[in-house]
Every structure is written in C-alpha cells, then in structure tokens.
Amino acid sequence: MKTINRRELGVALSAFAVLGNMTVEAQTAGADEPVLSHSKIFPFAELAAKTGANGMVTRQVMRGTLATGEYVEVHETILQPGQMPHPPHRHTHSEFLLIREGRLEVASDGQHGIVEAGGVIFTASAVLHSLKNIGEVPASYFVVGVGIQKPIV
Image (tube, rainbow, N blue to C red; front, side, top):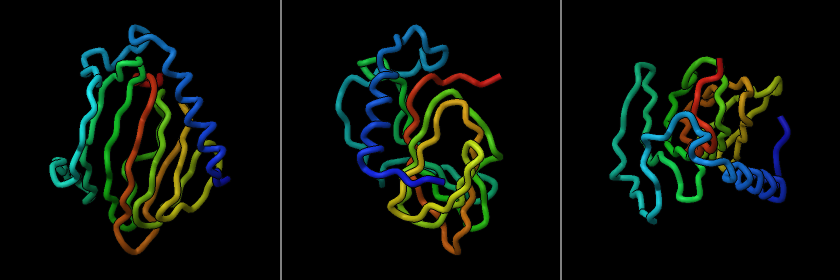
C-alpha cells in the first residue's frame, strides 16, 4: 500500500471539499441527521463507549450534515489484538482513518499494507476494504467518513 505524504493528503482533503458541492437533497441518507452548524468541543471523557462482541470499543463523536452540505461521521475505535472490526466491505462514503496507537493490516482496492501509530489510511468510495489489528496491543484509531451515506447494492 502506498503511503501518502502531506501534499497528497492536502489534495485528498481538497477532493472532499468538491464533494461538498453536492446538495443535501442528493444524499439519500442522513436527511434526518442534524445540521452541524455550530462549533462544538467533544471531550474524550464524555464520549459514550460501546463494546462489541469481539471486545471492540467504539465512541461516536459526531454525525450529521455540515451547513455547507457535506455529510460527515466521526468515531473512535479500539480494536483488540487479532481482531477485525467487521468483514471486508464497501460503502458509498469515503473514509480517513487516523491511527493513534497500534499496528493494523489494511487491504484496500487490491493493495495490502501495514499502518502504525501516526499513519493515515484513505479509503475511496465503493472500494472493497478491510482492517485487522496485527499487533500485540489494542489498536486505537479515529474514522472520519465524508460523503453520501447509502448502501452499495
């Protein structure tokens, strides 16, 4: 898997700004989500933790539609060693994963790679991808999803 430098990350983030030109009406899901039109601080200690069957812990930070029209969703995941958050899948939105701790194996669009703390993963819309904690300690990462939230059929 190719690592991206800061300039390429900037280009990718600019591409997300283009997604913002889509109208809210064009988004089939997220219409009942709140419009995120005011700045807010999200202290980590106040984010409710939800534990899954495989020991994975998730903390929803925010989800909704920005005043500029983009749908966004942010959450944090702590993934136990040897675990996957879910089977390989696709979705219409694009995602950035910002790795805080741990060592993750990534498969995305036929590419494979290892990402460690400080690394960033970008997954484009409709790309088959998966993630697995291959380290000996829990892996922690934030997911920032941007774009249309609807299932791929």
